[in-house]
Length: 375
Image 1 (cartoon, rainbow, N blue to C red):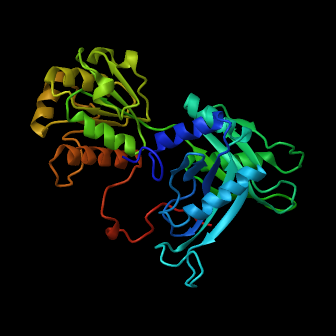
Image 2 (image 1 turned 30 degrees about the horizontal axis):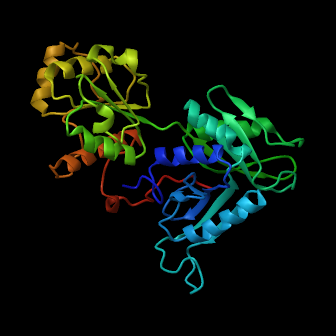
Image 3 (image 1 turned 180 degrees about the vertical axis):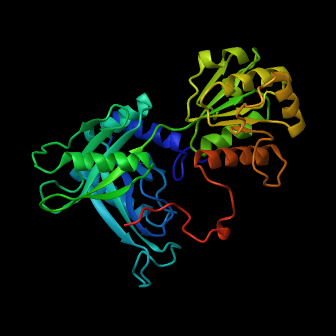
């Protein structure tokens, strides 16, 4: 479900974008650059238009046909284009009629061409990158849509082609680094001696990883929900003789190992979220012990509280052991008990930890649903 077309999961979108880049068929990417007020998606959301149709989602469906027409023009001309839609108007011929949004959305449409190669390379190498796109240069030196890149890991800046202007590059990089450190994707203004430069900083991170330890039937719903939520999912089984690829088709990777060799066969970092559901007490003990020594921010353990207390006692953990990363029993209390409901409750909890938020009903919130940057 949702493996292609509108609302395809992020891993599927990135694969399709990579395939389009290496294809000789014309394709275009629409990226939300700016939102004033409310909208379905926030800046950075993307949608791909190619010969196979559309992949991804940037609105709830109200602008996709118009954007598809614009993408065709962008592919024909071979140049990026900025378009703005006012979803707040009450006039009958406006985009605001009945779409359920109360904002002004600006989107950048650009051909999937050589200018996109650093993004594709970042996808492949699983490294972060920031795409810096000119929205408006009041000196008219740089054309709207001009693109530069910044690699946060090695602090390498790739300037836009033909840039011979004398603006303060350090000011740009300082603001880009500040936005990246705040995990923000937004339009920012670079003040210069002459006229301001308005750029869109698109912070593109590697997909977070979800590693599920176990090969039982209840692993499938967790893998399915995790994949749809945008995780690169790995299933690690501890018992041979099971065809993990066939059993878990939604997983990006499957492997068979032993609990004591986890760190030898898997790279588990601060963007890795671990779910332990082997249903084998000894395997769970060794797995949790290994994970506690690694920088993973989330260790979810299937089973009741009493079982984890026995597991902790078995491990003879020091009294000062930090168990704040351990979630046992695993999942949010959504009230359901079927395998798929349990799977959704687990992934809901993982998403809350990943997004560093406390789960609650949106109607209980007095502010906007998404974080916003003050102008």
